[in-house]
Structure formats: C-alpha cells, structure tokens
Length: 189
Image 1 (spheres, rainbow, N blue to C red):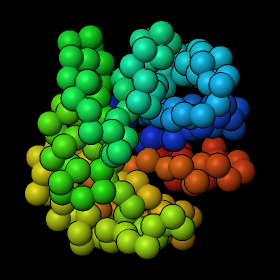
Image 2: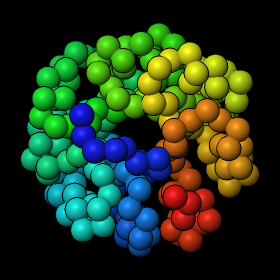
Image 3: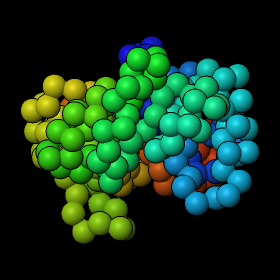
C-alpha cells in the first residue's frame, strides 16, 4: 500500500494548465485517455507537473505506462474484470477502482483496490440510473473499504456531498468547465 490517498480526484483525458494552478496538495489526478496516440507524451508532461505540485498520479488501465512515468498507482475502471493487477501492491503502488453496484464493488475488492469510486451518485447524461444519497450511503457503509463519490457532481448539488458517507469525491465534467481552480469546492481540504 502507498501513502495516504487524497480525498479529491480529478479525472483527466488531456493536459489542462488550469487544473494545476491550485496549491492544495490533497489532490489525485487520474489520467484515463485510452485513444490518443500521443497519450504517452501527454502523460509524461502531466506526471512531471504532478511531481512538482505533489499531486498523486494514477494511470487508468495501463500498468506499463504507470510504471514508466513513476505514477503513484493504477486506476481500474469498472469494465475491467481482470485479476492482472494483484501483484502491484508489492510494487508500492496504490490500486483504486470504480464500481456501479454491489457486485462490482466485490470485484474491485477482489482486485485488491484500496479505494473504490461508486457512481453515478447523481444524474448523468449517459445513464438513466443513479444511486442517489440513500443507496450510496447504504453501499458505502455495507462495504468495509474506502468509498468515493463520482458521477453527476456539479455546482448545483455539490453541497449534497456533505450528506454522503464518502471518503471524498472525484470529478470529471465538474473540472472541465472554466476555470476549475477558482471554484470554492476545489479549494476545500
């Protein structure tokens, strides 16, 4: 296992200098660009800045790339059911993942994830279902692992995060809007 995990995560698919203007060091960056042929160059740039800013970096679904850029860990998306990641805990890598229901949470626990993003908490465009506050809290308390909120978090419902039994949260579209570093929620510790 690695050092303490941050309580705020930003999912990136490309470099954005706005994200790195914050001085809060309790931030994790999850790089999850699967299609760009230049992703390795982009990730090297992101890794360099993460080291300077002392942000933890997690690479999605690519152990080789994570080792190459000396990332802090690996992120296993919900669609990945492989047991390939089991030996990474010996390499001082943090393993985090995502799930949408109890069955997927159990799968991530069997993959040795030390933290799991449970999503979508709120409404999102690509899914007709969301967990809502009650189901999220039930699943969070039922499972004895660190659970983070993800999905549908925006400026209108950000205050509802205080009602969740979560270790922290992650954002995708929340931080893509301009400029993310000025939002009050981004400055929380």
